[in-house]
Amino acid sequence: NSRDITSNLSLNMTTDLTQDFGMTLRLGNDVFDRSTNLIRARGQSFVVPRFNHLSNATNVSNAQQLTEKRLIGVYGDLNIDWRDILYLNVTGRNDWTSTLPENNRSFFYPSVSLGAVVSDMVDTPDWLTYAKLRVSYAEVGKDAPPYSTVGVFVAPSIYPIQGTTGFTKGATIASPDLKPERTTSQEVGFDLRFLNNRLGLDLTLYRANSKDMIIPVPVSNATGSSRFITNAGEIENRGIELTLRA
Picture (cartoon, helix red, strand yellow):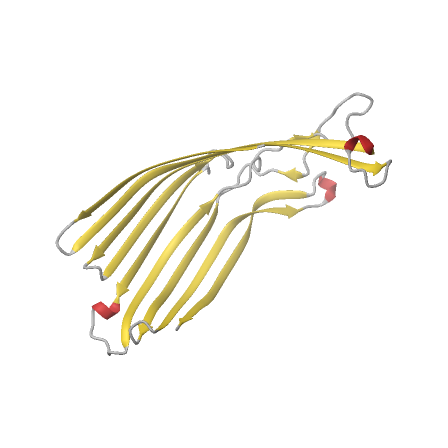
């Protein structure tokens, strides 16, 4: 069983600042709440072949998993355009999550992008129908899986033993100092169209850097655990995207 509750409230405003400048502003909040209840049963060593039923299994084990998570966010999105030639977009969002420690559960991430229709700003040859240049910078934050900051107990499948149940520490060591993951990306691109849109070329160069990635790191079994969850990863992606249209 999985239950998701979402709530989204936004306020949108569109107006002309002057004869040349237009503006669109969007403010809102977002709430996401998820709870799951997973019950799993496993049967082994069937008495009657190919009769797949738990009552036919010699060994039966079961497990139950309960998880809860809540994320609350507020955001703003501002668009300003000049004569439908220059476009500026600025966004910002702040999230509060239940899966990070109290000192780090609030995190903010912005973005800004600029687009310019060059073909409307300068004279271009007849064979160049449309030309647009765009640049952008963005940040994205991400929280941790539930129960990553505090150790939890689990009931191994060997229980009950002689009618007695028991619990033991989980296989993953929690980290009380987790920080949110953060990804920053930069992008530059242009869109060109030729011969009355019969041909088109779209080129994008991008780079994305992720840091403080939340990763379960292997540890010695002598610790009594197999993994330690922490901010350990850092990744960079860069590439080129090219699209040709005819």
